[in-house]
Image (cartoon, rainbow, N blue to C red; front, side, top):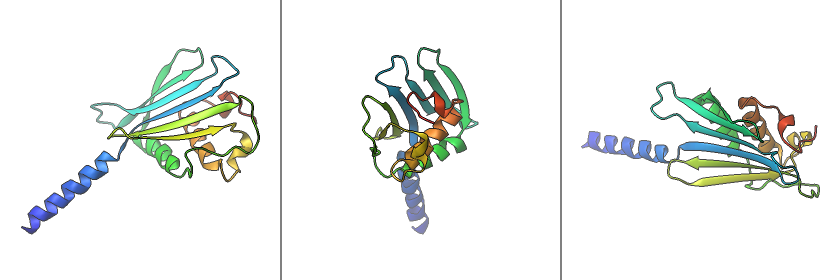
Length: 157
C-alpha cells in the first residue's frame, strides 16, 4: 500500500511539473515610425530531440529569416531571467512619442501565455530598478540570437 501511494505521488508531482514547463518563448521588438524595423525571435524545443536542443527562428526586418539551435541550459537561463521580471508592463520614465516597443511572451505546455512588455529601452535601462530585469532578458535573447543590442531600433547607447 505504501508503494502504491508513493508511486501515485511521484506521478502526480511529475505530471504537474510537466504541465507548467515552458514550451515556447517569443520576442518581438519594433518601432512604429520605422517600417520594416521589427525583430522577431522564437525559441521552441525540437520535437523528437535526443540532444534536447532548442530551435531559434530569427527574423530581422526585411532580411531572410534564419534558424539556429541552442542548448536547453541556455533556454532555461532565459526563462529563469524572465521569471525575475516584477511587472508585466515595465514602467517608462520619459515620455516617448512612438518609441520602440519590446514584447516577450512565454507559453507553457497547457497553452497559458505570460506577456512582458516595455517601451523605450536604452543603455540606462540596465541600471533602472523598474527596467533592469527586462533589459537583462532582452540582452540574453539578443545575444543568443547572434544580434547586438544596437540592432534594436530605437535602442540608444
